[in-house]
Length: 103
Image (tube, rainbow, N blue to C red; front, top):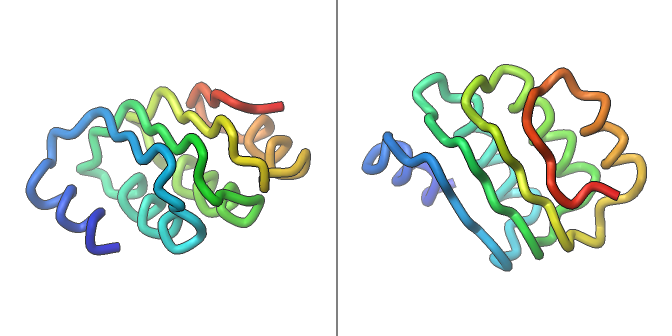
């Protein structure tokens, strides 16, 4: 949560964020969801490859993406805890985000 607050405050024009292999997990997804829901968020690309992201994290992110208008690409490659249910939730979302890594 603190990292997201710092990014939001000190890097308001951030358009690309890579958290590759950082074990983001559920707490990180909550914080990222808060960032993505912020109307001031300008993030266009978010790389979450090789993190501990599961179906619950997908739901958190999907809810945030429902109101986000800037994110264009979300890379979830190599998150082995995401099941077919999680991928299905993303594929049926109203979000226009291109999701990479879906099975």
